[in-house]
Length: 224
Length: 146
Ligand SMILES: [Zn+2]
Image (cartoon, rainbow over all chains, first blue to last red; front, side, top):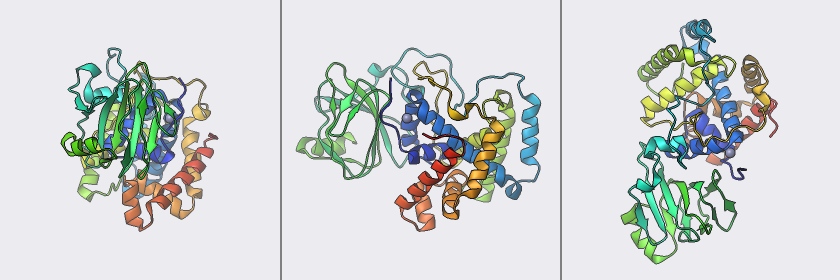
């Protein structure tokens, strides 16, 4: 699998710094599962945090506190060289096969079919993910094979990560692991490829702007 | 340790919690895989997200069956962990002030790019391009040419 569409550096940096809100961060963490290139960038960015923290120590802490911690670490070093890598936290026990990266499973479990899907017209269903994020909303979208999502514009940003199947819009084709970053003012009409349903994670920070009447009427009811 | 845009009390609490976590997890730390300060940074960052924003931190699971492995070793996998941080530190010192400030506000104070823009009274696009430019330089210092 070759990933063709990556998050911009600005998103990678926000994720590594911890300043990116939760919903966007889900999309980045999930993309990292598919993408060694971006994992590597996050690691580099975390070293920036580490370097700054190292330089900060003297002004803000009792002078020896960080040294003390570091010496403790050296004390236990290599006793148990378990896996640890930048940005990788507690690993969970092995999971059932699923199309969902672990970052998503921790929110919605691993069985996509058992989710209480909400229909958005004939071809698209959604499931809103519960987060503590007040800035953006994350949802799983399921688009029927070969069918379009109604044409829409954006008042804000939309990140879409393909989890299975693929879709195409006016700009490009997106497969599993690809992340599309659509800016404000862009209008597009994604169409799922024939064959399998396209399941993706979509994160938005403002309601979508539908061009057609019916989706527009349903929008407030359906929370999209 | 981190000002975090928080009151001194909360910042102090986050610092304490971070140290407790560092001690508890010290056994998981592998010096060959990362530098200690970077590891501590990630723990402090996660504490900050938890305490201050009350959000979760979605993270990658290294044992995820979906994980697509590295095909080739990354450029700085061969660098000594201690020299990575040295290189980055030197490179941060060489950044122009306006770029260094933005990087610091983001990583240490934990401000979003919008918050940095408001704090510095500078357009969001300028903040983002300063971040991108500084990241390019920092990655070059790691022999990262992508
Ligand atoms: Zn990527």
